[in-house]
Amino acid sequence: MASPTQALNQIKLAMASTNDLFNAEVFRKRNFAALEQIYTRDARILPPGAPMVSGRPGIKEFWSNLIHAVNAKTAVLTSIDVIPVGDGVVEIGRATLGIEPEGQGPAEMEVKYLVYWRQEDGLWKWHIDIWNQNS
Amino acid sequence: MASPTQALNQIKLAMASTNDLFNAEVFRKRNFAALEQIYTRDARILPPGAPMVSGRPGIKEFWSNLIHAVNAKTAVLTSIDVIPVGDGVVEIGRATLGIEPEGQGPAEMEVKYLVYWRQEDGLWKWHIDIWNQNS
Image (cartoon, rainbow over all chains, first blue to last red; front, side, top):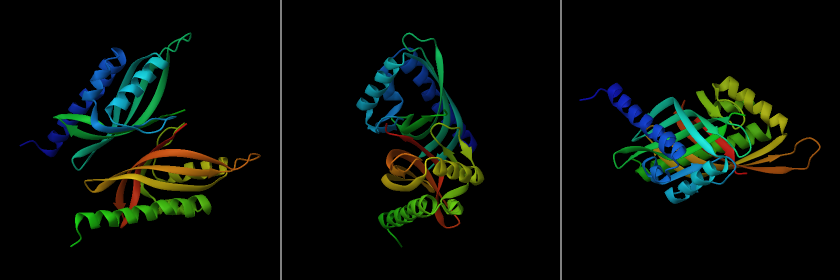
């Protein structure tokens, strides 16, 4: 039997691998099909400057549009706090987005986020995802 | 014994009364001491355009500054989804803020939010609170 600490560490590793996928596949390779391994089927995102988006098709469209619009290259996510809640996890984190908008030099955007995680098909995924900028 | 549905309805009523307090006391009366009944002692807020703030003294200062800066008058909160998670609740909601900035007419701001709720001293309170604007 795993101790609660070992179990939580396992979950944290699984979460880190989901977060890494967002950078490696979605941002670096623009492989938007990978969002199926990152968001649950009925996930919701609450993006700044836009209404809530429900469901994976809309979420794929959102990220495809945004990544192309600002010519985003990288999204490095760091967990600040991981709180087990029932069958899920609440995560506070920060993200550094590397972007290269047309006609401008490379720039970085600092973002903080709250994600409510659920397990689906054996993977830990983002079920509700909201973020905003620090400045 | 209360059924799970009855228990959840009781929690929703308690949450609505906390949300009403934010409007009636904090925004309408500028009674910032009421934030003690709204946020847990070690609550965190993740406001757009500013870094994360941890703990009630900093949270009181944040809301006092913001409400004075934009001359805010009302904050009407509406729950969109209430999800019980372990001992807490995850709430998606929207807020309409009524503001009257100096030298300008009254205006409304539309905000959406995610709050992770916990019980403290018999009250349901906001433990992590993040929001952003729709436009």
